[in-house]
Amino acid sequence: MTARYPGYDVLAKRHTLSWNEATRRVVDKRLAVPREPRFLTTDEWATLRAVCDRILPQPKDRPPVPIAAYVDDKLLENKIDGYRDAEMPHQGEAWRIALAALDGHAREAHSRRFHELAAAEQDALLTRMQKGELSGDAWQGMPSRKFFAKRVLHDITNAYYAHPTAWSEMGFAGPAAPRGYVRMDANQHDPWEAAEAHPGREAEALAKNKRVV
Image: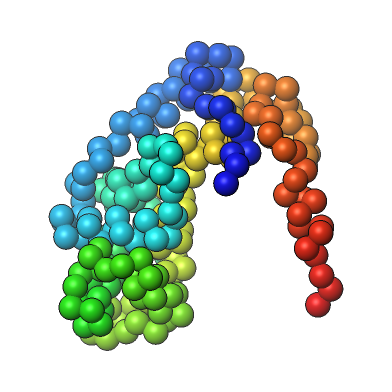
């Protein structure tokens, strides 16, 4: 896949007018998150990493975003969302329950732990989770469908897009404090933002493939 913003690195803005000291401290803290588990056990960590790899596969030509480390850090620091579904336990407990249950389902179906399965086997189990087809005592009453929607998709995608690598990938210039953004309408960019290699290509492809249903 051709990069939309080839050569763009948001971290190059570190010492420009785009970022102030507060922004640099926030970004530095994110980059310094340890790459090993501090909240989860070693077994839970192996399963989480495998789940992250299937939900958001990453390209091989750059260092990966440490998604699992960010999820683990969220649980360790108790960075809650400010709300919780009545059928869902606290986020840390929810992840522990689901990771253990997923390993259990993997053993039942394939006699191996989840992280030891082939990608297609992992995808099949995650699809069953998404549909709410995984159940049993191991889930402790937590609906697997809700766990997938409320925790898997929410925590993993948020972790990915909190990292500067993901910002560079989508041409985001970061918090931009104190400079700020001026051109805020759709399809407008400030002159210091990243430029797309092929602007409009995605819109043209969508229009070409659009059909009436």
